[in-house]
Image (tube, rainbow, N blue to C red):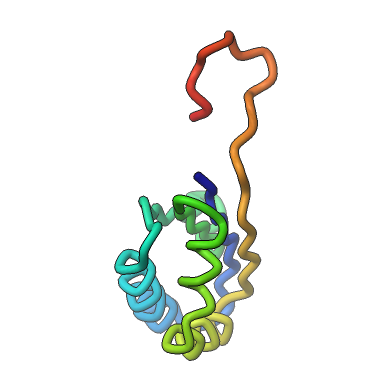
Length: 103
């Protein structure tokens, strides 16, 4: 399993931002290898958002994110917010007892 974390800084219109996020999330949920998706917003800095999406593996995320039909939505998202997506793999937590789950 991998997690894509996309830190986003809203600089445009919030309603357009949310509309394109809805489109992107619907696309991603329908893709092979998709596991879950969460959207977070900073209570202290409401212009800061984070999307966390779990995937079966990095290849599944890469395939979903590179599908030709989703590229225009990504462009519209970047028109409303600075985005910084990155895929992460889980690692053991230092000091955690053996056998503890990674999450």
